[in-house]
Length: 246
Image (cartoon, rainbow, N blue to C red; front, side, top):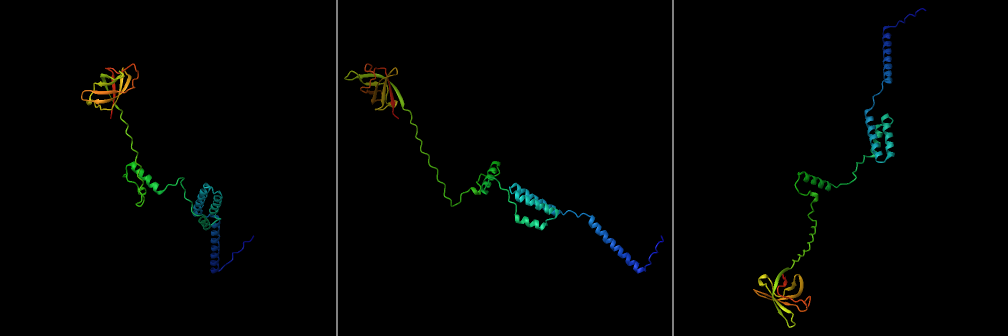
Protein backbone atom coordinates (compact mmCIF):
# COMPACT_ATOMS: atom_id res chain seq x y z
CA UNK A 1 0.00 0.00 0.00
CA UNK A 2 1.44 3.24 -1.02
CA UNK A 3 1.64 5.71 1.76
CA UNK A 4 -0.29 8.89 1.31
CA UNK A 5 1.68 11.97 1.09
CA UNK A 6 1.25 14.37 3.93
CA UNK A 7 -0.90 17.37 3.26
CA UNK A 8 1.12 20.40 3.08
CA UNK A 9 -0.37 23.23 5.07
CA UNK A 10 0.69 26.72 5.19
CA UNK A 11 2.18 27.82 8.42
CA UNK A 12 -0.78 29.94 9.70
CA UNK A 13 -3.30 27.18 8.96
CA UNK A 14 -1.15 24.61 10.69
CA UNK A 15 -0.92 26.70 13.79
CA UNK A 16 -4.71 27.24 13.93
CA UNK A 17 -5.44 23.55 13.62
CA UNK A 18 -3.10 22.69 16.41
CA UNK A 19 -4.75 25.22 18.66
CA UNK A 20 -8.20 23.79 17.90
CA UNK A 21 -7.06 20.26 18.66
CA UNK A 22 -5.57 21.37 21.94
CA UNK A 23 -8.77 23.19 22.96
CA UNK A 24 -10.98 20.20 22.14
CA UNK A 25 -8.65 17.85 23.97
CA UNK A 26 -8.67 20.05 27.04
CA UNK A 27 -12.47 20.26 27.10
CA UNK A 28 -12.78 16.49 26.77
CA UNK A 29 -10.28 15.98 29.59
CA UNK A 30 -12.23 18.30 31.88
CA UNK A 31 -15.54 16.57 31.06
CA UNK A 32 -14.01 13.18 31.78
CA UNK A 33 -12.67 14.39 35.08
CA UNK A 34 -16.09 15.76 36.01
CA UNK A 35 -17.73 12.39 35.29
CA UNK A 36 -15.14 10.31 37.07
CA UNK A 37 -14.62 12.54 40.17
CA UNK A 38 -17.11 11.99 43.10
CA UNK A 39 -18.42 15.24 44.59
CA UNK A 40 -17.58 15.60 48.31
CA UNK A 41 -20.36 14.93 50.87
CA UNK A 42 -22.12 18.12 51.95
CA UNK A 43 -21.28 18.37 55.64
CA UNK A 44 -24.20 20.73 56.31
CA UNK A 45 -26.66 18.11 55.05
CA UNK A 46 -25.20 15.47 57.38
CA UNK A 47 -25.47 17.79 60.39
CA UNK A 48 -29.02 18.79 59.49
CA UNK A 49 -30.01 15.15 59.04
CA UNK A 50 -28.58 14.25 62.46
CA UNK A 51 -30.49 17.11 64.10
CA UNK A 52 -33.75 16.02 62.48
CA UNK A 53 -33.11 12.40 63.51
CA UNK A 54 -32.53 13.55 67.10
CA UNK A 55 -35.81 15.48 67.09
CA UNK A 56 -37.59 12.44 65.71
CA UNK A 57 -36.19 10.32 68.57
CA UNK A 58 -37.49 12.83 71.15
CA UNK A 59 -40.95 12.80 69.60
CA UNK A 60 -40.97 9.01 69.58
CA UNK A 61 -40.07 8.94 73.26
CA UNK A 62 -42.91 11.41 73.92
CA UNK A 63 -45.41 9.09 72.22
CA UNK A 64 -45.68 11.01 68.91
CA UNK A 65 -44.70 8.09 66.72
CA UNK A 66 -46.49 9.54 63.67
CA UNK A 67 -44.42 12.72 63.64
CA UNK A 68 -41.27 10.77 64.46
CA UNK A 69 -41.65 8.64 61.28
CA UNK A 70 -42.21 11.74 59.14
CA UNK A 71 -39.11 13.43 60.53
CA UNK A 72 -37.06 10.29 59.89
CA UNK A 73 -38.14 10.40 56.25
CA UNK A 74 -37.30 14.12 56.11
CA UNK A 75 -33.82 13.44 57.52
CA UNK A 76 -33.15 10.79 54.86
CA UNK A 77 -34.27 13.19 52.13
CA UNK A 78 -31.94 15.89 53.43
CA UNK A 79 -29.07 13.43 53.58
CA UNK A 80 -29.48 12.09 50.01
CA UNK A 81 -30.19 15.52 48.57
CA UNK A 82 -33.83 14.96 47.56
CA UNK A 83 -34.92 17.59 50.11
CA UNK A 84 -33.26 20.99 50.22
CA UNK A 85 -31.96 22.44 53.43
CA UNK A 86 -34.36 25.37 53.01
CA UNK A 87 -37.39 23.09 52.83
CA UNK A 88 -36.16 21.08 55.82
CA UNK A 89 -35.60 24.29 57.81
CA UNK A 90 -39.14 25.44 56.99
CA UNK A 91 -40.56 22.12 58.25
CA UNK A 92 -38.59 22.35 61.49
CA UNK A 93 -39.71 25.95 61.95
CA UNK A 94 -43.35 24.92 61.57
CA UNK A 95 -42.81 22.07 64.04
CA UNK A 96 -41.58 24.58 66.62
CA UNK A 97 -38.96 24.22 69.37
CA UNK A 98 -38.70 21.05 71.41
CA UNK A 99 -40.70 21.16 74.65
CA UNK A 100 -38.44 21.26 77.74
CA UNK A 101 -38.51 18.22 79.98
CA UNK A 102 -40.77 18.72 82.97
CA UNK A 103 -40.03 17.23 86.35
CA UNK A 104 -42.71 15.03 87.90
CA UNK A 105 -42.99 17.37 90.88
CA UNK A 106 -43.30 21.13 90.39
CA UNK A 107 -41.25 23.04 92.95
CA UNK A 108 -41.94 26.73 93.50
CA UNK A 109 -39.02 29.20 93.54
CA UNK A 110 -39.82 29.99 97.20
CA UNK A 111 -39.53 26.30 98.07
CA UNK A 112 -36.17 26.10 96.28
CA UNK A 113 -34.88 29.14 98.21
CA UNK A 114 -36.08 27.69 101.51
CA UNK A 115 -34.48 24.34 100.74
CA UNK A 116 -31.20 26.01 99.80
CA UNK A 117 -31.28 28.09 103.00
CA UNK A 118 -31.94 25.00 105.09
CA UNK A 119 -29.01 23.21 103.48
CA UNK A 120 -26.81 26.24 104.12
CA UNK A 121 -27.80 26.20 107.80
CA UNK A 122 -26.91 22.53 108.00
CA UNK A 123 -23.52 23.23 106.40
CA UNK A 124 -22.93 26.20 108.72
CA UNK A 125 -22.65 28.60 105.78
CA UNK A 126 -25.59 30.87 106.63
CA UNK A 127 -27.02 32.75 109.56
CA UNK A 128 -30.22 31.54 111.16
CA UNK A 129 -32.38 34.14 109.39
CA UNK A 130 -35.36 33.08 107.30
CA UNK A 131 -35.11 33.59 103.52
CA UNK A 132 -37.07 36.56 102.13
CA UNK A 133 -39.87 34.32 100.87
CA UNK A 134 -40.62 33.11 104.38
CA UNK A 135 -41.21 36.57 105.87
CA UNK A 136 -44.78 37.73 106.36
CA UNK A 137 -45.81 40.84 104.39
CA UNK A 138 -46.12 44.02 106.42
CA UNK A 139 -49.88 44.20 105.92
CA UNK A 140 -50.49 40.56 106.79
CA UNK A 141 -52.60 40.01 109.90
CA UNK A 142 -50.73 38.80 112.93
CA UNK A 143 -51.20 35.12 113.65
CA UNK A 144 -53.58 34.46 116.53
CA UNK A 145 -51.94 34.04 119.88
CA UNK A 146 -51.95 30.47 121.13
CA UNK A 147 -54.70 29.73 123.57
CA UNK A 148 -53.57 29.81 127.15
CA UNK A 149 -53.34 26.39 128.68
CA UNK A 150 -55.93 25.82 131.39
CA UNK A 151 -54.46 26.11 134.86
CA UNK A 152 -53.46 22.80 136.30
CA UNK A 153 -55.20 22.12 139.56
CA UNK A 154 -52.73 21.51 142.30
CA UNK A 155 -52.97 18.07 143.76
CA UNK A 156 -54.43 18.19 147.21
CA UNK A 157 -51.83 17.43 149.82
CA UNK A 158 -52.61 14.34 151.88
CA UNK A 159 -54.04 15.22 155.31
CA UNK A 160 -51.64 15.21 158.21
CA UNK A 161 -52.31 12.72 160.93
CA UNK A 162 -51.30 13.04 164.57
CA UNK A 163 -51.46 10.10 166.98
CA UNK A 164 -51.95 10.68 170.70
CA UNK A 165 -52.72 8.42 173.63
CA UNK A 166 -55.78 8.48 175.84
CA UNK A 167 -54.58 9.49 179.29
CA UNK A 168 -57.97 9.91 180.97
CA UNK A 169 -61.65 9.16 180.44
CA UNK A 170 -64.88 10.68 181.78
CA UNK A 171 -68.08 8.58 181.70
CA UNK A 172 -71.41 10.14 180.78
CA UNK A 173 -74.93 9.64 182.23
CA UNK A 174 -75.30 6.41 180.29
CA UNK A 175 -72.11 5.12 181.86
CA UNK A 176 -70.36 5.24 178.51
CA UNK A 177 -67.32 7.44 178.02
CA UNK A 178 -68.38 10.87 176.88
CA UNK A 179 -65.02 12.76 177.06
CA UNK A 180 -61.35 11.83 177.08
CA UNK A 181 -58.05 13.57 177.73
CA UNK A 182 -55.16 13.12 175.27
CA UNK A 183 -51.43 13.61 175.89
CA UNK A 184 -51.13 16.32 173.21
CA UNK A 185 -51.21 20.13 173.21
CA UNK A 186 -51.61 23.19 171.04
CA UNK A 187 -47.89 22.94 170.32
CA UNK A 188 -48.67 19.92 168.16
CA UNK A 189 -50.69 22.12 165.79
CA UNK A 190 -54.06 20.79 166.95
CA UNK A 191 -57.16 22.98 166.96
CA UNK A 192 -60.72 22.63 168.16
CA UNK A 193 -63.07 20.79 165.81
CA UNK A 194 -60.65 18.28 164.32
CA UNK A 195 -61.79 14.70 163.82
CA UNK A 196 -60.59 11.89 166.08
CA UNK A 197 -60.70 8.12 165.61
CA UNK A 198 -60.14 5.98 168.69
CA UNK A 199 -58.41 2.64 168.15
CA UNK A 200 -57.30 -0.27 170.26
CA UNK A 201 -54.53 -2.38 168.66
CA UNK A 202 -55.49 -1.05 165.27
CA UNK A 203 -59.21 -1.78 165.65
CA UNK A 204 -61.59 1.21 165.49
CA UNK A 205 -63.53 1.71 168.74
CA UNK A 206 -65.35 5.00 168.30
CA UNK A 207 -65.32 8.44 166.65
CA UNK A 208 -64.90 11.83 168.31
CA UNK A 209 -64.17 15.55 167.95
CA UNK A 210 -61.65 17.83 169.64
CA UNK A 211 -63.46 20.20 171.98
CA UNK A 212 -60.64 21.89 173.91
CA UNK A 213 -56.93 22.43 173.20
CA UNK A 214 -54.51 23.73 175.87
CA UNK A 215 -50.77 24.06 176.22
CA UNK A 216 -50.61 20.81 178.19
CA UNK A 217 -53.57 18.60 177.22
CA UNK A 218 -56.22 18.14 174.54
CA UNK A 219 -59.80 17.09 175.31
CA UNK A 220 -62.08 15.25 172.90
CA UNK A 221 -65.78 14.40 172.95
CA UNK A 222 -66.78 10.85 172.00
CA UNK A 223 -69.60 10.96 169.46
CA UNK A 224 -72.69 9.26 170.84
CA UNK A 225 -73.68 6.13 168.98
CA UNK A 226 -70.27 5.85 167.34
CA UNK A 227 -69.08 2.81 169.32
CA UNK A 228 -68.26 0.02 166.92
CA UNK A 229 -69.11 -2.51 169.64
CA UNK A 230 -71.37 -1.37 172.52
CA UNK A 231 -69.54 -3.77 174.81
CA UNK A 232 -66.13 -2.12 174.07
CA UNK A 233 -65.67 1.46 175.22
CA UNK A 234 -62.75 3.88 175.01
CA UNK A 235 -60.20 3.29 177.75
CA UNK A 236 -56.86 4.71 178.81
CA UNK A 237 -53.85 3.85 176.62
CA UNK A 238 -56.08 3.59 173.56
CA UNK A 239 -54.79 5.49 170.55
CA UNK A 240 -56.42 8.63 169.23
CA UNK A 241 -55.78 9.25 165.52
CA UNK A 242 -56.35 12.95 164.87
CA UNK A 243 -56.72 14.37 161.37
CA UNK A 244 -54.86 17.70 161.47
CA UNK A 245 -56.45 20.49 159.43
CA UNK A 246 -54.38 22.08 156.60
